[in-house]
Length: 337
Image (cartoon, rainbow, N blue to C red; front, side, top):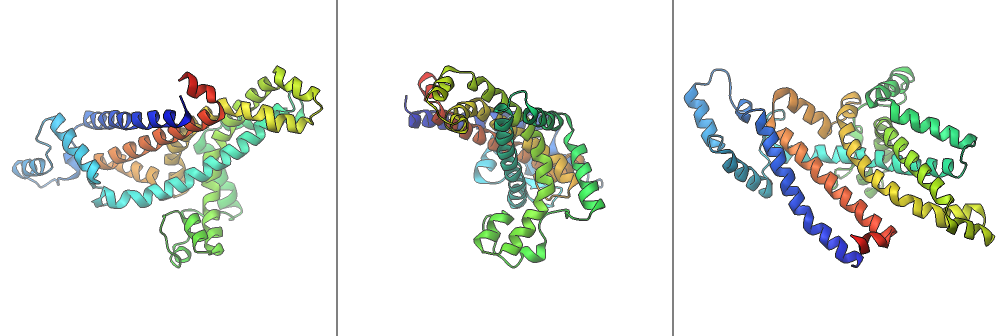
């Protein structure tokens, strides 16, 4: 089976998985009761409440409610957000872009540092460099994300006053267009490097906080995989040919060591999305995580369901990309799966 056929097969299974996710999201949301509470007020009579239930189809059976909700999702109607007093569809995109910008920078930090640290430590097994990277990795996997975020906040915001809170300064960002909703990308598209620097400076602390834990996991996996690959016969053959050690690692061992690490990178994306809730609260970041927290406190089911659905779809899409990348790195995956 060729790589294209493998990709096509995975794309065909994606809608089925998304449908299963939608059923699970809807079912779990209804376990907590009807979402009618977000639409009614204390002084309403039972008759008025009944009219609202009829208006939103909440008086129908659960299968009928699910079909109506799914039809709305397909049309882009995700319901009414009580916490924002506006349709979810009009609120979710700016929130999503804010979260995606933060998560993508955190993922970039995690992948670059994780792979580099893992390669550095694996190439120096049981030496000082390996021990140092191991300490960093263990600390990153052990430190709770909220504690690390608060530590950075106390030191760099309260202590030195270097890092700002929130997203980029609105007065700076207002002077440029925002076609993507990603402040850093839009700043570069407008060639406004002052706005880009400001946006990146606001992203620094929350992105480092989110990426540190994933960096540790990727580094440990990369280090273990590289140590295993450096003990293989093909590495000994490359060394016997007189290739420098750096070329042996870069051209041979590291490529194969990246294959199991790719799976960890894909799973780390899920941890990054989960970490946005805590990080956005700590650093006052106006993204999906903070929005969802407000929705949970107010029992806003439409917002909660939209958040879970969107993040689940993103997670499935990222895992698809990781599987495709895995197939390109190792064609045996395509032939055997």
